[in-house]
Image 1 (tube, helix red, strand yellow):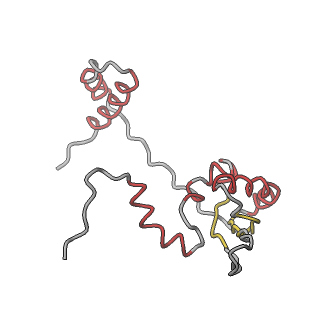
Image 2 (cartoon, helix red, strand yellow):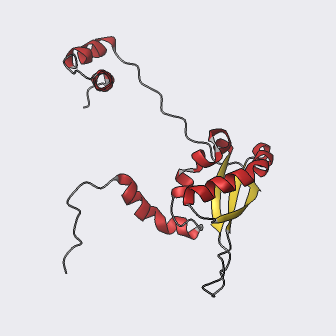
Length: 166
């Protein structure tokens, strides 16, 4: 038996993660990770900070092929202070979700009050040694593109500021 063929070109990490997460998301009613990934765009940054989708509850569909599909219910976990705001903006959010998917997949939102997990705080930025910064600037001085030169300088200064391993 031959091992599965490996792709001949690099594969984006997002493609690999989708395959890994599909079963876990499907158990919560999410056909794909789209609604989770686009939640901040759909709900807005302020509301997305205090509310997140939990699952999509799909109703049983009639067996007749001609019958229209019944839209699902999106279950959202929201902190109690933002549950009322979510309730008032629910019609707009439903419209945004349906526009995102291109069909009327969500018909209503069910709000569960609770505390959504807060995003982890970003790690502290280590202090950059001024001598390492000057050295990185001299190494990148010949790079013509200003944005690239700045990015390479920041990266080089961070690497040069690290203590030597071992």
